[in-house]
Amino acid sequence: MENTIYSIIPPLVALLMVVATRKVLPSLGVGIILGALMINDWSIMASLKEIYAIVKGIFIDSESGGLNKWNMYIIFFLLLLGMMTAFISISGGSRAFGEWAMKRVKTRTGAQIVTAVFGVIIFIDDYFNSLAVGNVSRPITDRHQVSRAKLSYIIDSTAAPMCIISPISSWGAYIIAIIGGILTTHSIAGVGALEAFIKMIPMNLYAIFALGMVFFVSYFDINLKSMKVHEDRAQKTGEVLDPSKGAVPGETTGLPESEKGKVADLAWPIIMLIAGTVIFMVVTGIQAVSGTDAGVTPLTIFENTDVAASLLYGGLIGLGTSLIFFFLKNMGGSVFGKGIVEGIKSMLPAVYILFFAWTLIEIIGTLGTGKYLAGLVDQHIAIGFLPAILFLLAGVMAFATGTSWGTFGIMLPIAGEIAAATDPTYMLPVLAAVLAGAVFGDHCSPISDTTILSSTGAGSHHIDHVLTQLPYAMIVAGIALVGYLVLGFTGSSVIGLLATAVVFAVVVYYLKSKYENRTVDAVND
Image 1 (spheres, one colour):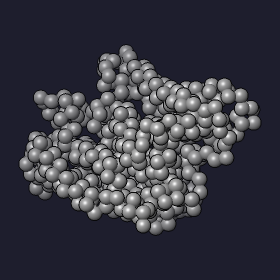
Image 2 (cartoon, helix red, strand yellow):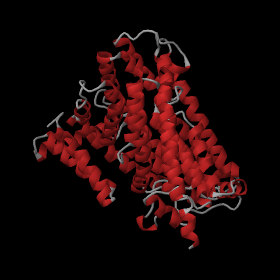
Image 3 (cartoon, one colour):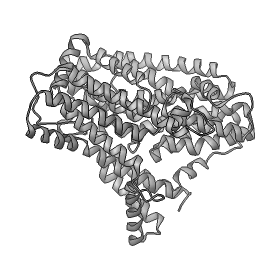
Image 4 (spheres, helix red, strand yellow):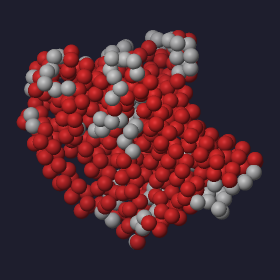
């Protein structure tokens, strides 16, 4: 059943169950079991061994026999972040920052715009963006009764779109490395990998207009479908979460708070977290390229940086800083122990979801779901349709597999091969369409790492984030699709961008006239 249409069944069943039941872990579990059974010809024992091997691989690297550092460092970082957040709260930093922000950010609109600006500024890495922006923004948005679902949408829809159009980011470096190989393979002269990436930025239509949509939605308070339910509840009752669904990642309840808290109790741990992470991204990147032919440049540093290790080291520095402020408050050993326990507990839901998602992604990889979807491209269609088709196919692949980076790895070489075989002048448009489609699918997928961590950073129920972000992502994708058709048939990135901008303006005018202030009106009724 590998590399056939049947390979899409496990992720499709899992996704449908998530939507139907709104229970993430059981849905992912069903997808995992079904996929393992299909791989092993419905043998129960062989399937159990398959799942065991995958789970073991999450912890232990099969090649070296040592710790799987990427996965474990990400999990450790989440736990460190939970503890850091708990001690910031105990020290009174969250409360003090909320009071400080209320004096300066006067409106709900301002709270949302500030969050979006944070998301644009912190573009080094999507994981780091999602978690850092969430922790900085939550006190502001909570005070202004912005729902956590809206907060997670703003975080998620600025994180990946910014990372994918920035050459100095973990995403940019990875993509440039792939592009360089494609250009060399097909002897595309006259343009280097970095130059090609920069030329593709105005062709990355989904990323550009997803960012535009975030600012539009924030400024005019446009709440579509289930987002309106969350925003209505937040404004009417002050409850930024659905109370019927229990605790969420990043939430610490029942912790004492110092009355002596200051903004510095929150600001310095986060500043040190950011500074430590960025410093170690540079250090690990330099260590990786030192003594190689690549040379030490900003591009090679970020191409080879160890993001997971940098997050871990930055997390340790951030936690250490928060503990300094905690001990200065003299709150006692019992409170310290409670902070450790509650901080870890607050992140366990996110760890569980990541654990199940990683397992399902391995199952999908063995089934060849991505390769099957990539093989659906028909090279005999009109060249003008290629950017639009590859945009949609990359979106479906990223949605089904939960990985934009995996989609890049599979789809970019295929897109390059198609362009080289048909019309090399379409090389950059089709590559840009793949990048945009992968981010679109990633935004819609409940098994995407970035989607999970955006929920975690915002302190939102994961399924609430997935369902509330979906309408906005679909609208932007529809707008971008028109742009890719225009780009494909004109061959002009300028005309494609302008056409997309016109469609975007028409759509947002319609949304503004139909949905603006509806939440406020509902509150006033």
